[in-house]
Amino acid sequence: MVRTAPSNDAAKVASGRPDWLPRERYPFEVRYLGHGAETVAYLDEGTGPVLLLVHVGLWSFVWRDLIVDLRDTHRCIAVDPPATGLSGGAAVDATLANAADAVHRVVERLDLDDITLVVHDLGGPAALLAARHWPDRVVGIAAVNTFGWRPDGVTFRGMLAVMGSAPMRWLDVATGFLPRLTAGRFGVGRHLTRPDRGLFRRGVGRRGRSSFPRYMASVRRVDFGPIESSLDRLATRPTLTIFGERNDPLGFQPLWAQRCATLRQVQVSKAHHFPMCDRPDLVATAIRTWHRETLGTRP
Image 1 (cartoon, one colour):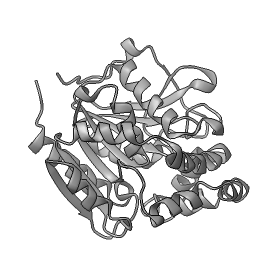
Image 2 (cartoon, one colour):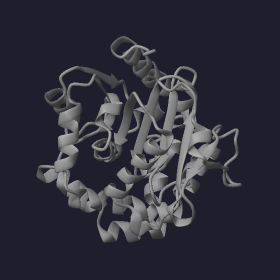
Image 3 (cartoon, helix red, strand yellow):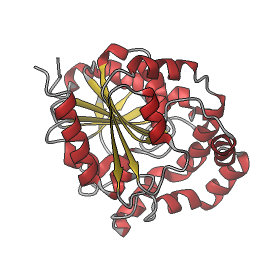
């Protein structure tokens, strides 16, 4: 049964937003689970079939324009993992396991069902790790420039080692070069205004600049057994992959085809690592059309 309205009363959540985040730039109600350092911030927008949007490393601003487009037809849930965005937690909490736990807590508290996972980057393995607790609630996967298997090969593991290294963390905390780079046209900022880019960087903040490399480092340490088992269990669910035409250096999209039985693949022309930011209209249409044609609207 599709839950078509936010279960705010049942969740007993608090809501609010920081003073620096104007509603006209981030037109959502920000909600929270927990308290103090354990607070998990999330968005719950729209009605209809549930889309659980998971990105790990930055914050839910990366989903902003996609949610605006999809919330007329879907209920969009987006989570800020610990030590990122509007969630609580110190940088030491920035591990893939803790990100998965935050996703799990939101799903359990909101009692979500008939979930389509919409996952990006490290959100892929984090969401799959969370989904091992409730595989029967997942009806489909939309994988956006992401993966769900053990990092293999010199290039993949070398990239994780460099991006997750202590020198990279110190450099980013000191200079903020990664959020600035990510806010540019090759990251999330292709169509963002200057104020929007500033808000994105503000949401990352100094704490997030430390958290991002820690999340990358944790990928090399986490046990991928449960993640791969979760993907194997969900491999018969309808799956959509959406990748930027100019950003699949490790060949992830063909690997999804090897693992999933019912697959539709989309390449976003001239897009990079954040196709939902480069072409939110096209990505929203792809998700909406695929969902209607493969999953329908369940009574």
